[in-house]
Structure formats: structure tokens, C-alpha cells
Image (tube, rainbow over all chains, first blue to last red; front, side):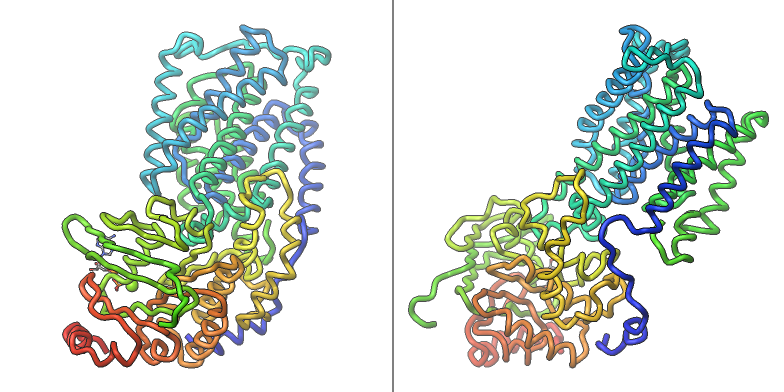
Length: 327
Length: 253
Ligand SMILES: Nc1ncnc2c1ncn2[C@@H]1O[C@H](COP(=O)(O)OP(=O)(O)O)[C@@H](O)[C@H]1O
Ligand SMILES: [Mg+2]
């Protein structure tokens, strides 16, 4: 308890205070972009796009969990609903990809506002339960509603010309549009976590009563980060339905909500790269182990258990601790 | 009390019931502007609950609270803080994962109003760095500016908490056991700090260390079983037979 107790720690060099994005993170973002530009020439573009969509989805989820400290068990609702609305907009209304995706994303934002304003009144596990309960309602809506096509989903969704001008049928061409959306989305999420808003958000995550005692209306911040997270989850879901020409029940199912938790924790929650790495691992596994059928789920479960037991902070979390740099 | 003083914070008939258990019972309390007022009493007397009521972290069952001539009974905790009535907590309350500088900056950020601007870079918060450094140095943490708060010793965390509170430039502070669990050296340092920051401010504090209370406070209110037992300066209060009884009865050290 004495002031001299911590002299050893005080003697360690203090972490230097940097203004703006640290240099190593700038390098990481540039390298990441380079890798992603090369990716569709090394693997199937559709697979690469799937990775991108899930990476954005996981980053959106991480915004809520890692920075807002709020665990949602119902993020499939925003991902899936946006995917349905986007598919409907492209197929029935004939909207161009950018407008269809925008429509789907806006739907997720509204849904996030409604569910979020009810959920943030609860704390901890009750918050998670409320989000799950609403996501189940969204699932049953998707199952019953006319426009979602029930068990079949919305199939053969067209990819119309971008801005009504550029043909997007070719997967490789479309890849670069998807890259722009997802990479832009991930950068935007990074900015949110490194904004004045993000600072207050972190303080609420660290000590909510203290943030209140400093005069912050914490529920407004929580609602805002909830809506932002739902919006980016929606952006990912909407984009995915354009990639696969399909919106289906899988996207709104509770297992999808679970998968994004898994990706985020495996990669490292609260880190910048963690959700991206987690998403890449899970999607790759699902892809290359698809021939094993139901066993994929079992293997996925095992990897998750082992991963969480071995490194509780996630892969990037551990790496970040070893390198003593925020990744 | 000298003529010309006015009430900064006033509670009347303040009552809090928890499912039939009355934790605070019909408490009348007046804290004069510019004074250091101590709230003492045995464990479980209801001191922390009083703080929670006065700052609206808890909703009173009955009673009214007036701050600086204004009825604040129906305001939210955050809005009360915005009026300049800022509390601390019995257990240390810092933002562990933020640096010392960032902790203080969170308070200073309040000057921008609300920070809902999620699209801007946090770089613009650098405008507060110089002043924040001043607050950090004023509590003797200058060497720890870029350390995570989690790395600080207990005494230093409490000092950081005070620096953060001061950065809000509050008119009145409610300090809940600011020196609990501290070594004597820290107690002396924080005592001196509280004395210094009381210039031009009003302070209400809960403290068990009676020598600190005797040294610092202008007025003392003794609480026991949720009720006001005695009030006055240190000499009056310490000689009151009820107070002596309550302290011995509750087995207080
Ligand atoms: N949220 C609560 N629910 C039920 N009882 C409570 C609650 N908060 C405090 N109490 C009770 O009220 C009494 C006063 O507690 P407290 O105000 O913390 O005392 P002090 O700070 O004086 O030690 C205690 O008996 C405590 O158990
Ligand atoms: Mg107490």
C-alpha cells in the first residue's frame, strides 16, 4: 500500500504516448491491404470475399464487446436481416449493389436502435439474454414472413451493375468492390475506437459508475455503440448476400450469433486485428473441412475450447502481450 | 458558524429503505459553502448510502436534496455531476486500462460537452494534454503519466482519482473514505492535498481516521443506524456520550 512499493514498476520505461495511429499499426494496415489485394489471385475470389465479410462482421461485434464491454448473443439478427433486405432490394426492387447494400445496412441500424434501446437497460448476462431473445424473434419473423422465402431463403439474387454503370457479375471484379466496403468498414471501426467517443466508451467499459460520476450519460453511449455495431454487422450481412446471390435462414440463426463470438474470442477481443484473424481461421476451417459434414462443428468447438484454454486473450491478444504493442 | 455563510448542499428528511430495512432514516444535513464537513459513524451506519442518495446513484424513498439553492432531488446522477457536485467511491475508481494521462483527460473531455463524435480522431484530445499533466503532477504522479492506471499502487490510484475529480473543476466534492487502506505516508500526503483543494470548494467526506477528521473538518455529523446522532465541531462531537456509546457499542477501533 505504500508509495514506494511500486518503484520497480516505475523504473520500467513508460510506454511512449503516441499521437494518432502508432507507426506499427499503420504498417499493419498497409500490409493487410496489400495482402488483401493479392488474395483473390491466390484463392477463389468468392472464398476471399467470404473471409472479408466475416472479418467485418467480427470487427463490428468486437466494437460492442471489446470496446463497449457489452456481450450480445444476438448479432445474427442484424447480419441476417440486412442480408434479407439487401437481397430483396436487389432482386425485387432491382436496386444496384451499392443501394441494395445501403438499404440492408439501414435496416440493421434501425433494428439495432429498437433492440439496443431495450437491451442496454440490462446488465451482464441479462443483457446477453435480452439480445438473444430478440434475435430469436427476428429468426421466427424470417421463418414466417412472406418476403424471406421461408426455408428456401431468397435465391438467385442478381448482382446489378454498380452505380448502374459497372458490371459486377465477374467475381474478381466484385471482389474489389467488397474489399473497398469491408476494408473501409474496418478502418471506420478503428476510428470509432480511437475517437473522443471511443475514449468515453472505454471508460464506461472500465468503470461505469465512475463514468457516471464524471457526468457522462452512459446509456446514450452504450446505445450509440450498439447501433454502430449493429450497422456494421448489417453492412457485412448485406454484402455477403450480394457475394453469394443468396440470403438464407443460416444468416439469422443463433449459431451465426455464436460463430461471431467464437471468431472474436479466438482472435482476441478488444484488439484491432484479432477479429480479422479469428474470422479468417474459422471461415478457412469451415471451407477446407466442409467434406467432414457435421464434424466441422465438433472440430470448431474443440479448437475453440483449446484456443480459449491455451490463450485466454486470443491469438492476437497473446501476440500483443509478447510484443508489448497494441495489435 | 460565521455570519454570511450559506448552505451548499442540504438534505432534509432523507430516507432510504431497502425492502423494509431502513438504511438511512430521516436525515437532515446541511453542508455550508466553503467548509470541509465530515460524515462519520460505525460501519453499516449508512454513510455510503447517504452519498449514493445525495448524488442520485440511488433514488431516495423520501426526502429532498438541494444543491446550491436548487432542488436536485429529481435529477440523474450524470446531471448532478454536471452541476459541479462530484463524488468519489469507497473503493478506488480509476479506468484501469487507460493511462494516467487518459484518465484525467476523460474528465477534461467533459468540457467539450458530450463526446458523441465517433468519426473524429482522438488526436484532437491532445489539446488537453498540458493541463491534464498539470493535474497529474499536482497529486505527485508526474512520473507515471503514460503508465496504465492498473499498474499503480493503491495509494497512487487514489491520488489519480483525486486528480481526475479535480480536472472537472467541481464546486463540491463528496469523498468516500479517501484514505481507507493507505499507509501513513500516503495519508499525510492526501490530507495535505484535500486541505489544498478545499480552497474555494466545499467538501463532504466520509473518513474513519479520526485524527484526519479532527485535523481537516470544520464540522462533523455522526451517523449511526441510519440516523443523525450528533453534529458539531470535533470537540463537541467527541465528547458526546451517544457518540462514544455508538462507537464502543459497534466495536469500532
Ligand atoms: N443496495 C443495498 N441493498 C440492501 N441493503 C443495503 C444496500 N446498500 C447498503 N445496504 C445496507 O445499508 C446499511 C448501510 O450501508 P452503508 O451505507 O454502506 O454503510 P457505511 O458506508 O456507513 O458503512 C448496511 O446495513 C448495508 O448492508
Ligand atoms: Mg461505506
